[in-house]
Amino acid sequence: SWFLSDDFAQIGKVLGGDLSVVWGQEHGGFFRPLFILSYLIDTKLWGPHPSGFHLTNIVVHSLNAFLTYLLSLRIVADLKLTAGTRRMIAIAAGTLFLLHPSHTEAVAWISGRADVLATFFCLVSLLSYLDYARSKHISRLALSLFCFVVALLAKEAAICLPFLVIVLGLFIGQVRNDRQALRRF
Image 1 (tube, rainbow, N blue to C red):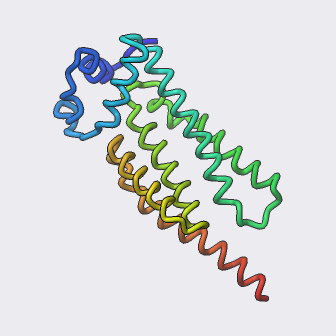
Image 2: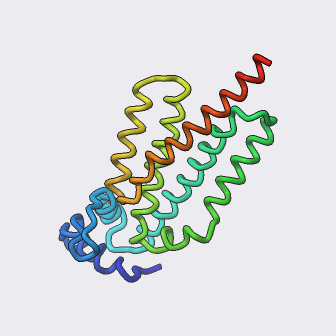
Image 3: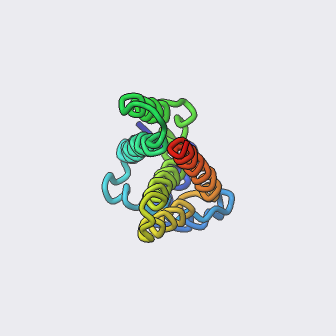
């Protein structure tokens, strides 16, 4: 395995001790400190060997697929389906996420790590929000908000997360209202 494209500029600087890439002045002006911190950790773990950096991307992407499975399982939990059907839906969602070709660049290209990191924290945020919606424990809401902020520090595209929370909240509310209406009937 090897470094590609932007990997040379970003990782090369981090390996050399230059952290100016945190501010992204040479790469679009992005502020992604979590992304660069992950490079620093990889540098300590793997040194200048790209295979370790690639392994980190694969591990985080695999964790994202598992979180997608958990999220799917929680989303379909209130639907009138058998437990086996709910589990199969969640397995299908996690597998589709894991194997979908649109993720190839984010996983294979080390500089695509910003995507896998932001996705990880967005998924944890959504799961925490769902826990909050069920339990009303403020700590779950605080964790959801914290993970949102951390996701933003990985990649600014995480700004779409509040909209996903709104849609998810509306869906869960609709499912619960439908179940309550059926019980009253």
